[in-house]
Amino acid sequence: YKRPEVKFYATQEEKNWAIEQRIEMKGKPLILWVLSGSSFHKVWPHIDQIIARMLLVYPECKIVTIGDEKSKLLDEPWKNEPRVIRKAGEWSIRQTLAFAQICDMVIGPETGVLSGVMMEEVPKIIFLSHSSHENLTRDWNNTFALFSTKTKCYPCHKMHYSWDHCWENKDKKADGTDEYWAE
Image 1: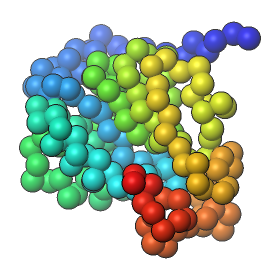
Image 2 (image 1 turned 120 degrees about the horizontal axis):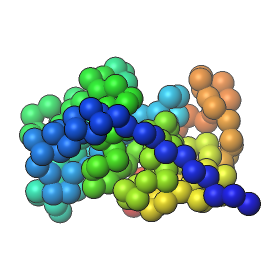
Image 3 (image 1 turned 90 degrees about the vertical axis):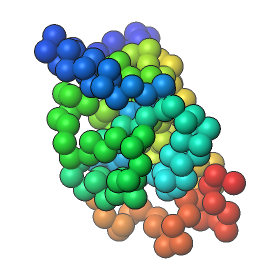
Image 4 (image 1 turned 90 degrees about the horizontal axis):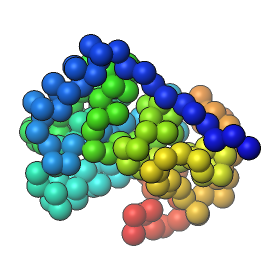
């Protein structure tokens, strides 16, 4: 067995840009939050409740939200909160990865951004959807994987591009029970 050696190599210009962003944002801690992944099932529920709690517990923190153009809808409720810095649809993947290497924590679903910093020492929290800890994050540095133990089909190990082969909870709950996943 050989441990993976995946690394994103930012250019010096990208590193300088990321450092400038960090200095300007002044968060303690400064958290990069990836809002969604490449498929519709890579969005976790209750993001707003988690962000709200973090802002209450850590009033000096700043949360930088990123993602594609569609992800802008997910951070819309935070448009008037100065501690949530909305960058979804604005930063390139290279800018995002350069910033991810120097922030205090990266949070998000199993997607390219988390995979891009898998071997970095920056702490990571990953929301698993179709992969398991054993087949995806087991060997990642400084990573905590969250997943549902109540979802009957987890892990399915399939990418989903429609609801044809993926269970949809119409009640917006994460696990198919009458209880919310965070309770």
